[in-house]
Amino acid sequence: MTITVKDVAKRAGVATSTVSRVINDHSSISDATKKKVRKVMDELGYVPNIAARNLGKRTSSAIGVILPPLDSKERIGNPFYLEIIEAINEEAQKHEMTTAIATAKSFPHLLENVKRMHRQRQVDGFILVYADRDDVVIDYLYDNQIPFTLVGQPHKNEEEIVFVDNDNQLLGKHATDFLLKNQHENILFVTNTTHESVYFERYFGYQKAMMLAGLTALPSVALEHPEDYVSFEQILKETKATAAVVIDDIFALRIIQLAEMYGYSVPEDFSVISFNNSIFSTLMHPYLTSIDVDVSELGTMAMRKLMDQIHEVLTTGVRLVVPHKLVKRETVVPLVIEE
Image (cartoon, one colour):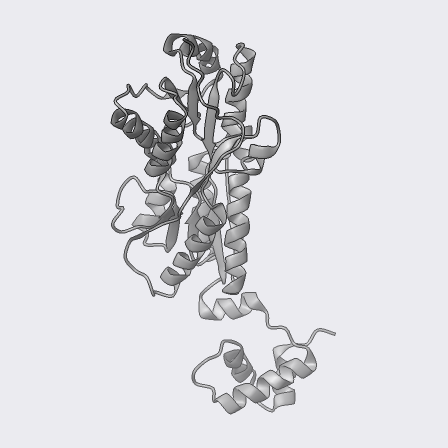
């Protein structure tokens, strides 16, 4: 038989409203009464109804994790999202919070999902695990003053938004510097997105490294549509590129396959460095040289800063930078200069 609030109240000799206030740890109830009621709850094995408790508190004890539109197999299969959700969920449990996922195939549908979660008070705040230039979701959260933390760099209102990020411009520079250190000079920057903050920052870092080395920074090679891949062989021939900085690990594997299809051997003819240090970096040979962005720390800090906002400890914009490290593997080798 299910134990109810009435059963607890009857055994403890108090009103049902008193039991409800004890469950919500209300300040109007004395410590002695709280102790007595909680003892009865333990004896009866009563488990509070979290939904009912939160209804009284007008909170949900849950946070929403917003993924970008999952409009491609690469994005759906990207381990970055699974890793960061795991980190967020682990930190949320420490705060007695649960997580709910908001996802869709397009921004309009994603916005509707987020609006519904907010209006129905399903969550107390949100974490966006991406930063997109044309994101209507972040505009909605900002305009309605809904607590949220961004993983990535916002395109506007940086001084008012709480965001957690790597120094992606520095990442792009370090990746390029590593190729330069290995005597590569004709270096490409290859990407499958041109509207996310991570692209702009990493490409800026590539440009900076090339200019500081007195070399020409080439236009980014954007392979966003099937027809774009056809031109990659011609780009390799025209630029005489011997190396590439690639936007992330999954896409780097595709670039390696593409280069080898056109007769280039990796890393002997063409070196590749990428980002995230995901599980894909060691799934097949040659193992990827990649920059570890510490996904777990990104998720953990994003959750902590969201809780600060929910509890009104943090109300102004702040940027937290998570350190990175280069993991050397097999896809970058020194360029052999023929005499």
